[in-house]
Length: 231
Length: 131
Image (cartoon, rainbow over all chains, first blue to last red; front, side, top):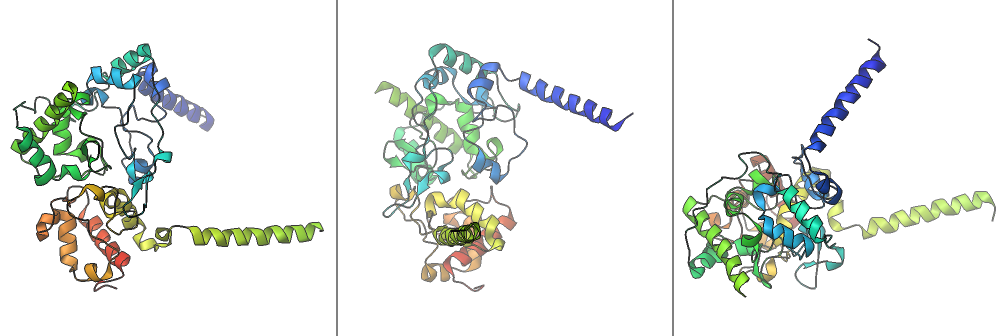
């Protein structure tokens, strides 16, 4: 067989393979989300990729988000990460402490209702690898706000990077005040347990936290959002 | 001005511009190649608390009850043995009876990466036994 013929067949197979992969991702996501978010699991988990990506990966969005929140947020995308994604590209030295360079942050596009509903439906079909999130891990045991806050702020130091209210907590991670509304409880549990398993290379450490403490932290975060809803 | 003079002027202007850019590059850009990877690790994971200038004034430090370590402080860093620096990166602040706000990074970094970071910290503070 002629070499060019082999090359042509090879290229065709490659194109078919890419086409199949792309076909698994609904069109609405290809047109609205693909330029900034990974919709299929990326091969590279290098630091360079972390620096280059424009938004969080969405290939496991269906195991991460609550659909109602997605529909609402996509129409009114308020800021979740005070220092953007990723924080290091948006902070600069200030008078004393480093500050967020607000001029470097770009707003997430707003979708109209029909687009938001279509995108949310499509995102919920992207569930990622089966073992990414521990289904049923969260036991929904109530924790007092004081106890939860003590774990979050003092014992585990989560507030170093996450705000629980405006001006209360660090800025390099996403805000937590609405996390319970936007995220599935099992995802919160699994992410705290091992953020590196879900988002390899992310600037959140994997801590050695017992199941009992993971339950308390997850409950606190879920309850925090419930309190926000009542305001 | 003939074309030869014009070309010479362009070259001179180019060299001048390059010299200006060399001066306005961030300090970190001058880091030796041996610390290039450790510097990237530091920028990715450590600056959120320890600051862009490595001085303990990271964007998260505003709300902290304990100020993160100033890695540019030769005196403060020079007093800490290498073994403790490695321990604190791997096991967190509590390993040295320091703040819980310094988390354990042993679940993220390999031993080799921890050692590279520890060496980089000596480079930043210009202090310690291996300086």
